[in-house]
Length: 79
Image (cartoon, rainbow, N blue to C red):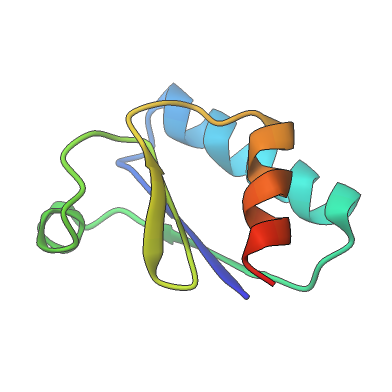
């Protein structure tokens, strides 16, 4: 599983990264976590608001900091 956090490094993006890391540990899943900071790449993928979260290439959340529980739900449905 590949999880991408899209954002420019703002506090909300950092909070999203921390929540993703916690969710992966709590869910007990194997995941590659990648930061995407290239604005052109984000726009090409349809992301207009950050932070955004993609699981296996599909943008699932944009424009808010997801909770650990919300991320765990996405990880469960992504399996």
